Length: 148
Image (tube, rainbow, N blue to C red; front, top):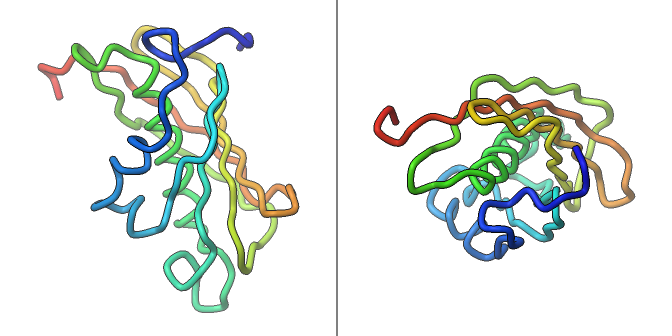
């Protein structure tokens, strides 16, 4: 994709409403916070703690996928007219590269394709040192609200 503005309405979306949207759902339970946004990318973070670790104190792979789907779905929804359409996940995959044990992990979602009915997003999750923890690809369907 180019470095052109991708957000619906031509302005970068505010971060606080993105975090608040998931407050009483899985993103809130996992501690996911949206922290930055550019013209064609968005970043969120998630703590590596008792909520997101597996029994051996490593970041749970499912938590990484939940972070990837959260940020990718929110980003996809910000690229469409939400008065007429909704973005819903179709498929997600993830490759877990290295463990994270504590601190925060950061997810950056960037579009590979933003089409009229389908979007594809790459989500790179890194640790506090910038090392790749997980890479994920999310495919999203854009459907009319009346089909929701």
